[in-house]
Length: 401
Image 1 (tube, rainbow, N blue to C red):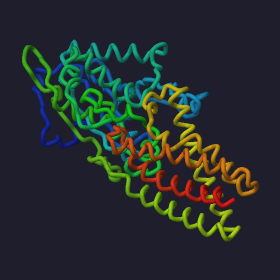
Image 2 (cartoon, rainbow, N blue to C red):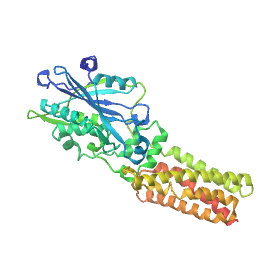
Image 3 (cartoon, rainbow, N blue to C red):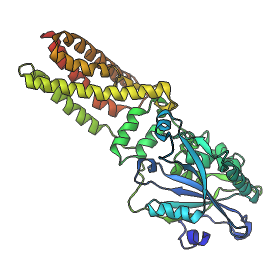
Image 4 (cartoon, rainbow, N blue to C red):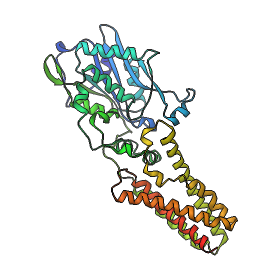
């Protein structure tokens, strides 16, 4: 099984191999899996594989197991009480599974002593017991990759954390998320809107290991002490399978242009309908319906963010400046826009509400201009022009009643 995974592959150019005599009989491999097609596959995956051909050990531990069909999965996902677990598999079938889905698979042999390797295996086995295997999955702080990272750190007596916890990166949880879902536009903009200011804080190398591909790169550069000597943590690397269609983007894309085009187009449309609608009832109806739909969508989005902030364990949705742009108050504006068409007495409340929503959006724009530290330019570009256009049209109607 080990030969099938490693022997037929060509080592990477920077592969580092220790002598057979110095190796413990229990080999420990970090399996890193690249991106896939589904949104939850975009962040990659990893596992720890323990192999000892003499003792008959072949155990790969996967801390990212979940089941969409499990009772209450959807509600737990909404509230942040997501229940994942660790599962044990034979190594080669696990590798084949990911390769069959056209996901890059890489192996790195970790430079652990016999005692360290057995310490990691013992922990994995205990953790996989029915009483211990379940945990509350946190996409950034406690996921499949951070669990693997923590086992490696434990096995190396804290060497991994010592080498990475104080080394800061220019990355953030948001930038990594936006980068990894680059080819899934709705997911990309959804993450941009949903994540609050906590997601924009710079993260350390240790924290960036929530991405399996980052952990792969990190362990490659870490050194550990073995038999009194400083040695690389990774002694050998192999690419077992290379994807044909799922390439990981290296840089963080700028995603504001398309929202800006949509926001300006929507604003121009609303302003045009608003002016023409003053003379044509059918056009006026179109303006009010469009304003109501826009308000309902932004209001629902804001209500979801506010609910997540106040009533769930999605900590990174908190302190979200996008609530000034995706305003729950818009949920009240939507029916007012329609009612003001039927009953003149609702025209002024609709206009006042629209102005309040727009002032909040303007506040978000000012906050960004004076150094607001939340990365929400894409949401600003989409929402601000349309909010002003809605307020412009409804205010003119209230004045002209």
